Structure formats: structure tokens, C-alpha cells
Amino acid sequence: MAFPSHRLVFALFLSVLNLQGAALSLDEAIAVLKAQNLEIKAVSLDAKNAHNDLRIAQGYNFGSLDFTQSAVRSNDAGNVFGFKLSSRQASFADFGFSEFSLTNPNILTVQPKDLNYPMYQNYFQSKLTYMLPIYTGGKLSGYSKIAREMEKIKQLDATKVTGEKIYETRKSYYDMALLQHSLEQMTIIQKNMEKLHAKTKEMVAEGYAKKVDLLEIEAKKANVDRMVLEMGSNKKLLLHYISFLLNQKTDEIAIPKDDKAITTADEASVMSNNTDLKKASHGLAVRSSMVDVAMAPFLPTLGVFGEASSANDTLMRNMHAHAAYTVGAKLSWNLFNGAVDAHNFEKARIDRLKTATEVEMAKKGIALQYDKLHTEIDNLDEQIVSLEKERLLAGEITKNYEGRYHEHLVSMSDLIIKQSNEIEKIMTLQSVKNQRNERIFTLEKLNYGADQ
Image 1 (cartoon, rainbow, N blue to C red):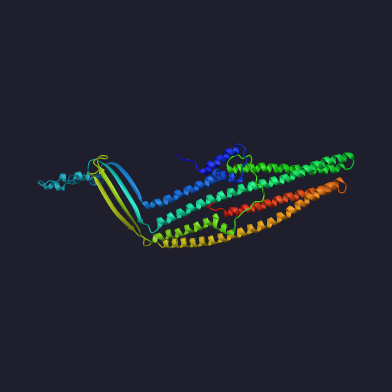
Image 2 (image 1 turned 45 degrees about the vertical axis):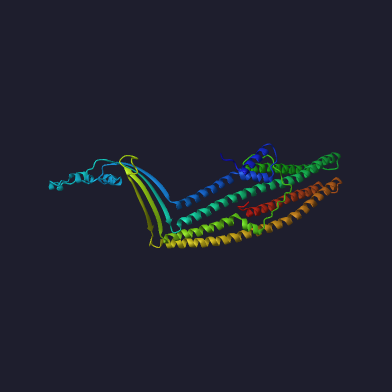
């Protein structure tokens, strides 16, 4: 009986905890993701199947052993005497000598009837044949190398999909943290507007404020309520998406304390771990092996074979006495085929050169992508610092205008404008933080390698 892997057991344990209402942390979610995500499972099966392709390619090196059992009945002259010779049962009479006579030479003018019109003959043959390629000009070894590299490429495909799903999971968690922090700030504004609304109603009743002021604050309050409701809906949608990624229902997650993601990935680790670069390297190895395969037709092939058989007119009777053995070797060498092999070899060589060029292009492309992401992250960090200060200032200005409104120094429109500015700063800050986190996770995805 096969036991489940420790990772799967851990994932199932986390699933039980989640069903009991425990908030799922990011690390726990990633463990569940690796064990249960359907896309990861599907691509992992492709990687396992690639191992079977490798075993198939390697299996041809061991040749083939075939067993054949024949059961035939015939009165065809060629078959009958062939059967008897094969089963070591032939006699001179089978060749018409029974019609020859030494006393009557005229009998020789008669066509031997036994030879042309034999009786029906049963034929049962058991044959074991083994064929082994000794030298194929490097074709079999080349195909084995190609299959081995393709297996590694499929494994890297599985690694890449896993990295992409981890990226989506981490981004969802930090999106939730951003939403939560923005929601907390919007809730504070919402409560302040409720207080302002109540205060304005009192001021209208006492004649210190106009009814239009109350309508303005109610309209703005409705807008804030709508934004809070939308943020709550977005949180639910994120939980649905996390449930989809983990392939299990997730009602609560442990939101990261800091909504600002960090990474330790540097350029050296990205260039070393990147799955696309590793795939390109293995692809170049495949092209090199294909050149070796294209060279094989110029070289001879050599194979050996052995055969053991036993034949009789009765199935499986006295097999040892009727046994026969055959061994041999075959050398084959194509000397001319219209230069097709030469053109195939040149084509394979050019494909290898092209792939080598593409590998260099991929390296430069990944390096450029790293530099671009790193520059964008630095720029967004500076924007976040600036926007944090602007948000704090906008909040203080709103508080100041609330007090001045109560003292009838500014109008409700002026106060609404300042509150709108504060809300705009909150939403802009959330958007910039989200952009920064996205770049961080993209950088980590570039760094996700087969050893992780």
C-alpha cells in the first residue's frame, strides 16, 4: 500500500484546520497550493509522463525478445515440404521417391505425385527471437539524450506553473492586506462623516447651517458608504479566488501585517534560477543531440540476432528433438540517398546555432526585465513615501476644515473638497502599493527555480 507524501499530509492537515475556522497563513496557503492546485497537479503529471518517454528511448538499447506460436494446416506443396524440413520430419518419400522403380525404368517418365499432390500437413512452430542493436551511428544514444533533456524541460514547466500560482497566491494575500488597510482608513472617514452628518443636522435645526449643507454631506457620505461596500465585496472576491487556487473553500486568511511586500532576489540569483533560462539551456542541449542524430545516417549500423525454435505436426510435442537455432549479425550502410542526409545534418546544425542565439537573447531579456522591475520598484517606493506624507497632510487638513466649518469659517463645499482630496490620496496610495507589490512578486517569479 502506497502512503501519501509528507507534503500532502501536511496540506490535508491544514485543510482540516481551515474547515474548523482557523485563519490560513500565507505559508500554509502555499503548502496547500503545492499539494492541491489542479493546474500544478496536471503539469506534474506531464513531467511524470516525460520520464516514461525517457525510459522508452532507453529501452531500445536493450533490443527486443519476441515469442511466436504458429498453428497451420496446408496441402500446398511448398508449405508441406517446408513444414517437414523445418520440423526435421522430411523423408525421401516426401520428394516423390516412392514412385521410382529400379525394375521398370519407364516409371521415371511419370511426374512424382507425392511431390506435387501431398496430403494435408499440420504445422506447429514455437519460436523465440532476440534482436539487439550493437551500433546505430549514435542515433539511439542521441534520442536518449533528447528524451532526458525533454524530461528536465517538463519538470521546469511544472516548476514555472508552481511559481506562477505562488505569485498569484502571494499577490492575493497582499491585495487583501492593502484592501484591509484602506478599508480601515475609509471606515474612519465614514465614522467622521456620520458624526459630521449628525452635527450638521443639529446646526440646520438651530439655523446655523443651510439645508444644502446637509444634502452635500449626505451625498458625500453615500459615496463613502458605496466605496466601503465595494471594498468589502472585493475582499469576498479575493477569498473566492484564493479558494480556487487552493482547490478548497477558504473563509478566512491571516492577512500579512505589512501590506508592503519585500524580496531578497538579486540579479545573480535571478539569472541562476530563472526557469525560462534553464529551459532554454536544455533546449540547446536537445538541439545538440539532434545534430548527433542527424550525423547517424552517414555511419553504418550493426545488429545481432538469435533465434530458437521448435516445430512439429503436433502442438508442443517433443520440442527438444525438433529444436533449431540461428544466430547472425547484420551490417547496413547507406552510401547514397541524393544528399538528403547532408541537408538534414546542415539543417540540424543551423537550428542549433539559432537556438544558441536565442539562449543569449533570453539571458539579455531576463537581465533587462530584472533591471526594469528593479527601477520601477525603486520609483514606486519613492512615490509611496511621498503619498504617505500627502495622505497624512490631507487627513490633517480635513480635520482642520471640519473644525473651521463648525466655526462657520469655511463652507460645506470647501470641507467636502478636502475630504475628497483625502479619499483620493488613500486610493492613489493603495494603487501605487499594489503596483509595487505586483513588481515584487513578478521579480520573485523570475527567481523561482527548480531547487525551490
